[in-house]
Image (tube, rainbow, N blue to C red):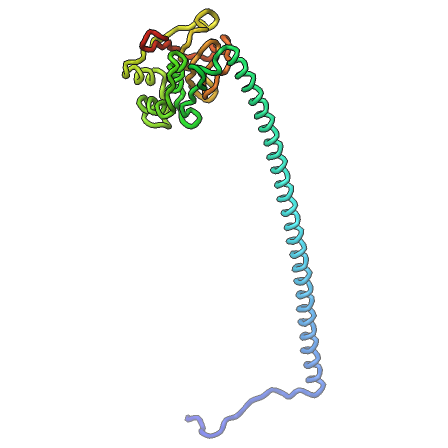
Length: 250
């Protein structure tokens, strides 16, 4: 059977009365007001949390700035204390240097070789202590002064570079090739007469092995004459050499 052609039919439910529509509208209005109230409450809570977060952030910044300022103050105080210690140490070192120089002058060592100062030989910059000790041995024995460049050259003849270490033995072997010096290994008794014999020593220091020229109870090092005791030498000396320079002078 074919579907009849033509217009359409609409089926609708029962119509609402006026009172029912009013009740429906009131219900929807109540729901809308409830949702609006809930939204306002949530917005208020969010605002409170935002203000709390901002207050906490400000407090954290203040605490951080305060902690940083306290740290800066502690570091400044530490630096000041360190500077005071360094200043006091420098004063003690200066006083010790003055005493050492006075003792060296008394021993006749402040002005070796006819009026010159001891040869530092670049040992404040490079590990040239062995070459400097040989140069000061020459100065003490003959009065002949060599320059720092000569000391650096002697060091380079025994070491791979200026920054490399060179033993006393290696430096003495390099110096002996010139034909002007003879070196002899020596077993010194520092409490006896040999304490007065000029010798080149290897001594053990906290920072490593160091070479000095021993002369009349003084260690010639870093351009200065520093007094040493037999007890110190007995504890620290690793090896010793006496040096004989050509011409009969030792």
